Image 1 (cartoon, one colour):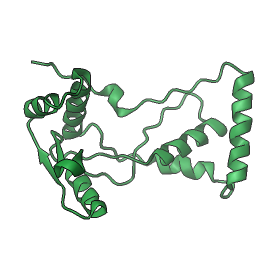
Image 2 (cartoon, helix red, strand yellow; image 1 turned 180 degrees about the vertical axis):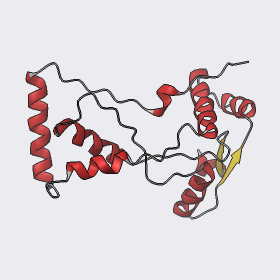
Image 3 (cartoon, helix red, strand yellow; image 1 turned 120 degrees about the vertical axis):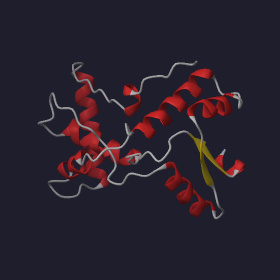
Image 4 (spheres, helix red, strand yellow; image 1 turned 60 degrees about the vertical axis):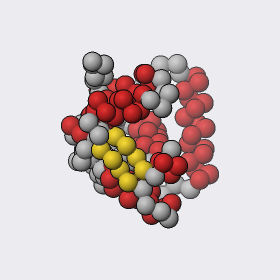
Length: 166
């Protein structure tokens, strides 16, 4: 939608987002699941470089080869505009709650645990694709035999309170 309409809308103000790539999160999960010493620990996983929605619009503009803007709206206007697109009310609630949380600073972090977990995975030297695939197969086989292996992944959204609709 941003490319079709020339920009992004939201209610994130100048709040920072400490996101990371799916690959970074996956590698951290592999490190925790395949190396000992993580039992009972909780990690706050965040990207090294925070960005704002305005920064995102500028980056997408560069990739798209045309200008895209970020228009910040009050949460009530963002809700009204998003609701008028035909999105389900629950999705609109999630979008608004997420942007309010971004504006409040809830999705910014100076945690450096993500790269530390990635380094821990590679402590014995870089693993090749074949070695990673074999480790993944061995872990999956072990999990199939032992039903007491559980993994819980919590994301920022789990701590974001949903706003009142009024």
